[in-house]
Amino acid sequence: FVAPKIYQAEVGAVLDGSFDLLSRSGCAWRAGHGQADGPEWNVGRAIQFVPFTAVLFQRELFEQVGYLEESFESYLEDVEFGLRCAMAGRQGWYEPRAQAWHLGSATLGAWSPAMVRRISRNQVWLVRKHFPGGMWRWRVLVGQGLWGVLAFRNAAFGAWVKGKWEGVLGKCGDAGEGDVVPVLRECEREIRRLQQQGGWDTFWRLYFALTGAD
Image (cartoon, rainbow, N blue to C red; front, side, top):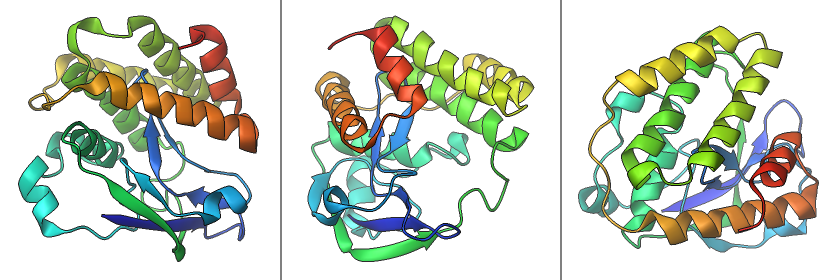
């Protein structure tokens, strides 16, 4: 697969994202989101997680690793697919010469109850499906708890609670095959590096402060 550089449609030279990275908390970051365009984002590179906002796939990839997890509905279904690709040793390419503009949250609305409920639930399902044996429990509690604080600040805490409840009780499909540990460790190193370089988001500053070094 190949993914373009994606700008925020309403801002201009501010990035919506380029590729995704998944932490050991089950919370994902669209790399570069909210940051100004710059040299870091003008270099092509191999990637493992790709946002489905704008992307080209070879059909054979779906035949090899499966299709999207339909129970996720929307939000993080592309991250879950990327995790299966990474565990299967399948990579893609970030190509900054290809560009797109994205009007984010245009369907459900930013921090709408429907959006928050889905993300909150799907964070739990990522952990249940791919993190064996309660792996990284502290990181999961910290990351998803901090995301709950963001939901509270955006008047969507009830939807966050509902999503977590659905995540615990609902069914989310079968686990993927492969070793998730090296994939997510490398993702976290890259999140830390890019955050240090482009300026820390409060969420990730607190997450790494509370969970410590690798």
